[in-house]
Image 1 (tube, one colour):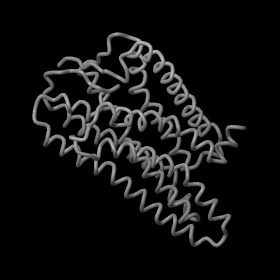
Image 2 (cartoon, one colour):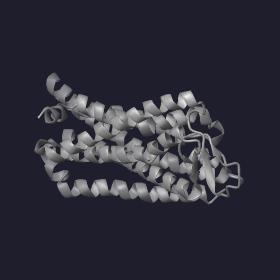
Image 3 (cartoon, helix red, strand yellow):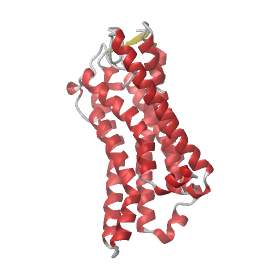
Image 4 (cartoon, rainbow, N blue to C red):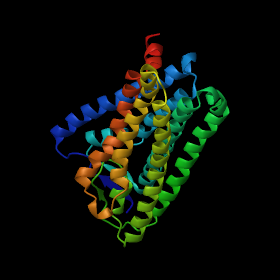
Length: 295
């Protein structure tokens, strides 16, 4: 196979035009919302704190994440040719996985930041120094790109000799594996185990952080202070639930349960809709961001 055909969401011309309008509006909203959050954090000195440093990384990730897949999807909705080269497919898969795994790790880092802020407030600036924050963010990016290299290498070492039609809007691992003209059981098992490790390790760390946070909040005597402490975590909890819920559904199940028509909507949700909701949730639930926006 020298190229793949991406079938996308619909082959009906009328529906394609409607989808193009909707997806373009969503993509522009993602670019605007996340760029605004990123710019606010860079410009406003009150937001030069570890929590917002990681939020800026998340916004940049969401912009990059969606730009990997959405522009091509929009182009395919307007053109008759819906192909992507074999090399282009590998590159898209690698970049998408790199950014996705980076986001998984970054959510765990953000949970640790909330744990330190609530459980060790007097030592917060010492523990979460600028250098430590940069190292933690850099480790998330390096880890994402490394594990994605392994993931992509395992997937693309299989022979692909036809058919070449992918019932998806981008080159995602479960959809590509369906086209391999070889026994994929060992590969699927290895990728499943990697998916479990890469998703469940951050989830476990996030859960542990919030168990300790909850214990610390319950020890606070004032109901107002308890609410204020917990409210700093609600945006993060919401985004973690949305992102990990859909990602775990996609990558932590047997290949036999893969359904192209259903699963591409889940992929759209965790890769595009979560990026759209991120600035809305963080700006609407965060007093500092709202004040910076008004200013």
